[in-house]
Image (cartoon, rainbow, N blue to C red; front, side):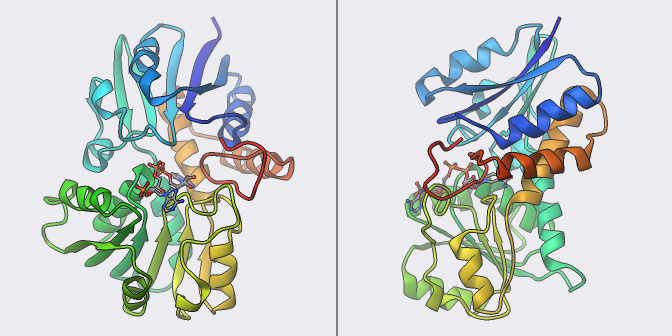
Length: 294
Ligand code: NDP
């Protein structure tokens, strides 16, 4: 029986994840098919229930469902429980397990961004969705002492801060209103800026006007391309990294969870690059006015 792994999101049309995961299954001789399921929030509960069937190895969950899916699985791993967000599902018999491989994926990207320098202790995070939760949890567990979260809808950032109340008890985690003067003031006091909003995913917009960017920041955009934010940060003298490495490593961790086998990282990276070169867009981060946004 050909096993099935599905990517559940809305919208999903083409997928960078599909290109790298299918190639990995094929290369390791695993008889499995990676499918894209575009499901609206209202269809999510029925969709998740379907995954209990024997033919499913599991699923990826993406925009905008990562938080909504939490109560729909039977058990959460530590990272999924701590973040309140699930991006990978595995099946044990009829039971579904929710994982969050964005957390280890983010940590690989952060380590690469920081390089040989000492790990900073302050960060500004833009966004308060599922991706931002993985980022904030990764920063807390990497020993950051001050994290400020900005979000268009402040109440969502406040909800994120409340969610991490206990894990952040030893440090300062704050939600602040999205005002340019406040963002500018916080950026002048920080070393790390992470964009975990979808701004720049489907248009060439930036969450932070260029003139607010100080030099010598470390800037990570979760979006998998050289976004306007990254271009302008680079011009301001900052060190930048896009979401490619995070995407690759969250995918590799998911592959291992479904199959029990080490992921063929080099192959997956090559397939990601080919898919990008072929113009495929992704909900996990490909930009600029393209026809579809998976
Ligand atoms: P969610 O839908 O959970 O959250 C979206 C976030 O973007 C919210 O903070 C939302 O703010 C903000 N946002 C969206 N549109 C706008 C806008 N026009 N103006 C201001 N804020 C906006 O998505 P995710 O957290 O799952 O994903 C967020 C981004 O991170 C995406 O670009 C995704 O591609 C990327 N990502 C990349 C990963 C990788 O592996 N590289 C992994 C995970 C995510 P509000 O709450 O106010 O609506």
